Length: 266
Image 1 (cartoon, rainbow, N blue to C red):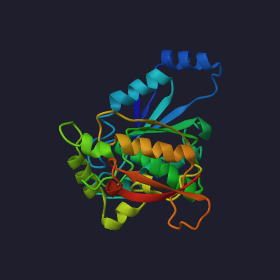
Image 2 (cartoon, rainbow, N blue to C red):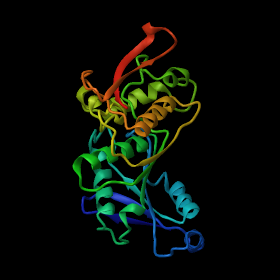
Image 3 (tube, one colour):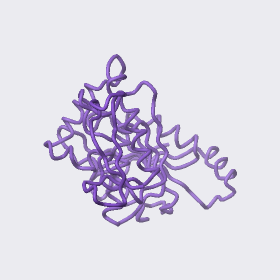
């Protein structure tokens, strides 16, 4: 079952309910009928395509498989509405849910962010924004082959962009087109809310599950983002900071192929 609801910010989201059977089975397993849970789903599509209508079946299956309520955000798309418009829509919906201002009054700790591809990017960016703004903080996020970087040309530091960038459904060329349409200018691409991987500080982020695909140009950046989250690494511009170590990301075996130097928290 789904229901359209218009929020106070004049955006739209879909509310998917689990069937009564799946809901009861899920609650009986947890032995706590009062502890309702929710997935806040942000769809993919390169910030340019797709909609909650196209993800209706996925959200319904998620609701029935987990016994949880699913809210899917219909955020604004580029190129008509460029960065950060879509992210702001997602943040506004999340703030409403986490603040307990929604009709179901789900406990904040029982809400999980989940998104695929560009939706994974928006989930990661939303979590960074929530930490920085201090208005709420997600406890968990699921990032499904998330786009976390800002370059899909031959200059990308991630081998999977070159290895899997052609001859598959999602190509490196398409990803570059998507981010070019999403960004207003070159400065946007340097914003960690645009490309979460380049955030200087990834401390105090939600417990995170990252799913990547073997033959996907996004594979390596998703795994690299997970490693930074796991270790609480912080990108530093000043090597005099004794809390930082130096990590060099190389493509290939030769030192000349190293594309960047990062200083990371231990």
